[in-house]
Image (cartoon, rainbow, N blue to C red; front, side):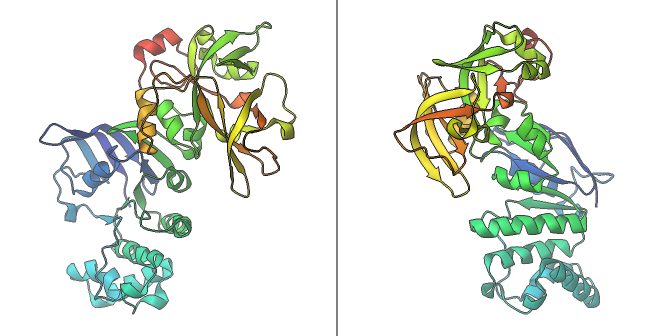
Length: 412
């Protein structure tokens, strides 16, 4: 086991393309760190640089006490689990798991001991004499992990290992990987595009966009305090609703009012007290985030004045435990490079620059009786509103003053 440190690590290809820029990460001994972001954000390139499969253009990579920038992959003492299982079809499970040890001329008795210990950890003991073709997808992935485990490496590197599995198996294997990593206590760097995977597996999650680290924090902190619009929109499923609004002074001087198109929501005093920089935006435009889970059917929830959006239900997705309710209000959507990137990642063509209204998604209780085409009153938990600077995209939490934020604002 070892600490892994990336200090200003970058990757620039000969044609000038920058895949990773000034990546700073300090992964503790035994920590499970997840790299997540859209396709092409540089997360796999970062992992391959740690593995030694990509040359580092700048910065310093340290594994344990060694700087390994120029160390060949075979000498870095890390084990990589790929998206493809890469199993030898003519070899048994036993021989597939032990193949790397055979190449290293490890004694047969030691190979047998390590393979059987790994198989027991992975629940493969009764399959050791089978061929890969006789295994399920989940079992094949366990064999690939077993091949990494027997090496007893300083770190595991996993590149989207579950992407070839069906949805049910992915959930099962997430739990298995989490259990195995905890049991072994091996430093692990895990790359995925699936933010649900990232949130459920990682001790910390590092969100990347276009080769630049946006935020690294615990899953809950990423969810509760996203540093910018990109992180806010990427973390959460369904994604956060992002709207253009403006803050207005309230008559009592304690709270404020948030104008969203032709409707308003009361911004409670405690929220303003928690985020003092918000007061500097009164009388100005803001980008507003509302998570689907922070909205409910007002007919069920006894909504108070100033916390309701009125609309018409456009679509209801019944999921059994909840309803995903689609509706529209006259507030314009947030259109920035961040939201365009999020739209592309979601497979959308893009966001209209001058849209006059926004489609929102809310999570309703299955007790709701809302129906397509019917009026709907949506209660918003206004204490859970998110605010972002409309110019920099940075989250508005505390000081400094907005003018300083705009001058020094960053998306990272």
